[in-house]
Length: 535
Image (tube, rainbow, N blue to C red; front, side, top):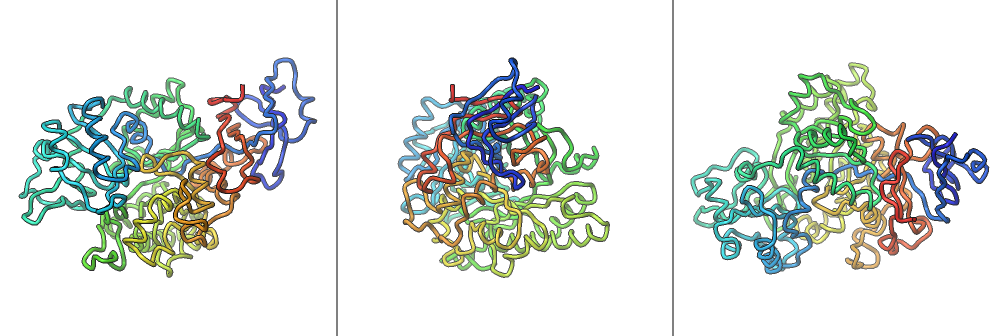
């Protein structure tokens, strides 16, 4: 008995035992068989038949690094992504003052990147004041590692020349010591603590809106890195039968003690919502020049970035989490941060070996791995540490990387190095830092070019390109393994969950520049078409 039979499909299973198929037989939420037209004999009068007319079918795509609360809430904020100048950013902010939604009286926005502007200089509160007046305004940088606020926001937060920089954070100041309106890293909460959080129900509704966009992009799962408020909203959606994405929820380090107290372990949960790992920030970001570096930023001999969590603290957190059954996933952008994190994982791996814990039982990850020192390239593979990377960062950031890191960029944003060194690579978007459309990520990984073809026909550091198969597996196999779900998602095989995406072009057959012309025709999660443009 079958609930559904998919026929006339161009199926790439990503299963080495049976890599291609034409038909997929589904019962309830599982695949029961794949093959050719012989499967049609299994259908009866109650079986629903879906004819794909030769369209490509792949395992459902998984975003291995996303901030789902931030993504959902950003749908109602001033959109400052890809603005080419401060002047255009200010125009959008002015429009937002007239039409935008304000939370607790604050105007919010996201996406600016001063490195994209001709001057390359950070904006100031003085730029905002003529537009925003007495409306406190907070605009998050594209990276999420800085905010731009106006004078009303500074006053509301009590930030003055005498306010000390908090540990792990920086208040940018002018030549006489006055705050400019830019807060970095752990200084950001000085202002954000004043903005009221949405209720759990409001956040769940925002996530439900974003979920529809995720299905339309081919996503069936994601790994989230936001706060406990996101977890509460996800649980509400699950409880009410409204959750339609498979979510791995990571726990930020301020809350890990609560997880230990409850006895939670990585993998606890079900096929819809499960616990991932402990999330730690080692450093900042490239765009704000707070990524932690071995050598200084080009042209700034005194700047080596910002240390957010020191090695000793990281080691204590990771070691305790491992003893309690929780893997760790650590944000590291600069080569010094990556080096320090690898040292921590090396020490903890030795402890695990002494306890008889196999690396697969603690799937430690480094998030981003944006710049790695040549001496450290092979260490992730050797330590069985997952490289969780975002291919679209390479194309978005290449100009900043060339400006701030110079020739070191050959070792930046480079999944090719990790694949060749034997590390598991999981791909994601880091949304809302970048769009969560996985086809854009696949295009960036394969071409190393932006949608407009820049920087050139060969792409940025073309030796870092990956194959189409490697790119797709980063959003399927690799992400499934990183989430501890490789026995049920990441490929199309008997007994696996019926999660798949249908595309109007065969990615393996088209020219790389045509990837961005590909349309998602359908997204199935658990045997249900959550997005269907094939009717």
